[in-house]
Length: 242
Image (tube, rainbow, N blue to C red; front, side, top):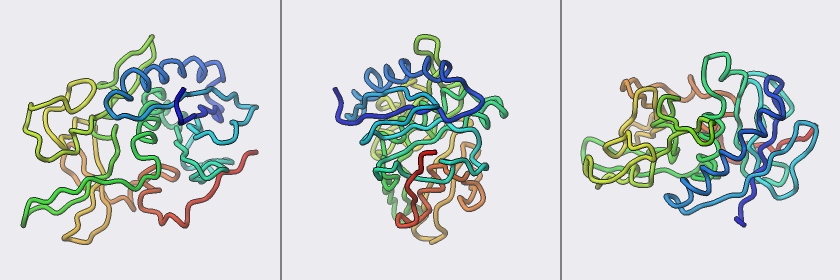
């Protein structure tokens, strides 16, 4: 049994309890079998139906509809116990043709990799680069095409700790579970990462695989981890159950 317990709670109107419940075993397998050996953290997952409430002391992975709708949980950042919470916006995924289980896997692993959304890798190369890379473990390879199947459920690819290690040589080790990435800080098509350029003092912004920087203030979705990373910790709110 793991020390971390995560409630996968369906609060979406576009997915039934049966649909969400059916995906939980695959997410559990990914955490135990694939994630834990690489990252050294583990968790036990429990499905919570829409009409129930998670048990005290559990972290939450909440399945919601849209990030731009003020639902009971949409803008709240922590569980009532002040513990980590991940959010999946299922209606938005379906609307734009994405697979919601990939997003659920993505958010689950990133919550395990950086629960307080406060970690970053520092890269210094002298006069040209002085940068922090957000410790987000699925952004670089987030596109559905790089996901993989577990018992018929599509889950997200994720990077290994080596992705954040600038001393690694191209092709020198494995950088992601799927074996698609060949070098540290490489972004696959459709991927991105949040960076903070210390020299410029311009704040957090987003690098994409197309090398087009996008500022967080313009792109971060309400309730997303990117929004929370640029929000002062004392402004985070506890969730309310309704």
